[in-house]
Amino acid sequence: MDRKDFIRKGLFGTGIFMATGSFANIIKNDIDELKELEPMGFNHLPYPETIKTNHMIIHKASTRGHANHGWLNSFHSFSFAGYYNPERMHFGALRVLNDDTVAAGNGFGTHPHDNMEIISIPLEGDLEHKDSMGNVSVIRKGDIQVMSAGTGIQHSEYNKNKDQETKFLQIWLFPNKENVTPRYDQLSLNPQDRHNKLQQVLSPNADDEGVWAHQDAWFHMGTFEQGKTADYTLRKKGNGIYAFILKGAFTLNGQALDTRDGMGIWDTDQLSITAQSSDAEILLMEVPMVV
Image (cartoon, rainbow, N blue to C red; front, top):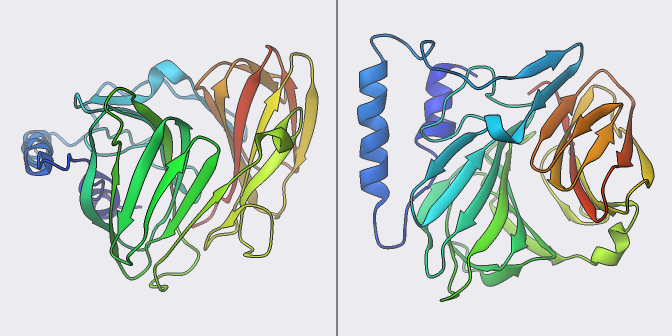
């Protein structure tokens, strides 16, 4: 991804703004910051530590990018909006992994996307969704939402609760085909289907378990008791897998990880998982490494 594409897909394509209209101020601040940095380039910035070994990368929770806009508190595993780190542009087809908290009575006003697969996974509370295709719905904890932006879509996400914040994961995938007809889907999952095992929540196949996306990607979620194990076998040769710890502690292929840590591995066929705490939760995202 070149710098112009980063700006288009990351810095200026975020849609981070309130329904009340603070988008212009946020974008202006980003533009002003970019102008200040441009004579020096970006490389002088103090990038958070990225742990690398052969065929593995680890992003500790404390090293993620962070932006607190008051109404939105967001942690970025990869470069996004005002957070830029050349070592964290994407993991294969996984472009964005944002850990977002939306304050009560606030949300993302109507904004555009194109040529991106956008997945939302609520963790607490709920969000009302509206889009230019006429869809109006609410996503809650236990649901998964997918949008194929394709040729272009506009949407908003809003927390209408007056006394409860909403927490959710915002995930973007590069698609395997561009300019598709935009579409929207959501599904309510049974959390019992991930107790001490991995539940598939996304795949490339419309007839398969979970929602589907225009990408050779498979997502799984699991909730494990301490000491329980599982093995994940990658579905497609050449894919890698990015694991994100939602809660608790795990050992993955011998590597210890804690809440909100991320780890990507590639050139492997299998991932071995052991829960090191009770009620530990994990999200696995298998994606192509070449995009």
